[in-house]
Amino acid sequence: MPGRQKIIILVMHLLLLLPSLALALQQGDQFPALTGKLLSGGNFEFKQLEGKPILIKIGTTWCPACEEQSADIKKLDTFLDQHQIQYVEVFVQESATTVERFLTHQKYRSPDVAVLDSGTIARKLNIYTIPRVILVNKDFRVARDGAPLDEKALKNQLQQMLTGK
Image 1: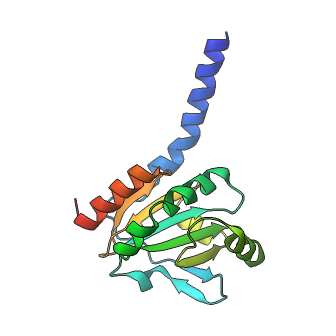
Image 2 (image 1 turned 180 degrees about the vertical axis):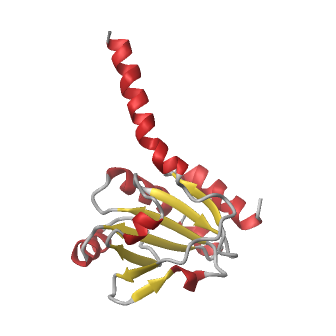
């Protein structure tokens, strides 16, 4: 019976992941025209970054997996800077005060752009699990959309995006 319970639990977890996998943006898709609120208070349109490669992390300040993803992104500081990759972090359902405190005290790379999302961006991108990592090439096309990546896999995906392969 314990083995059967483990299988049932595993299947349930996989079923929970299916919506996020099935509804992810597809490679080559035009990245949608999205607008968010900047931490500084103004509006931000993702389209402003067209022409630049973009790494987007969608998550929260309290999520352990989001923190792990931030640690892996931090390890790529030099690579991101060398290739002028814009790092955008979207904070879902977080207050400006919480995000400011988080960014002030964190030990990870601060995003080039910090976006507060009241849920609109998450709904439009069908975000069901966090963190979510989206790569957008300089042509504003999706190069990758999905679950978190460790440092090596993220760097590999970024290199593929930059070379167009």
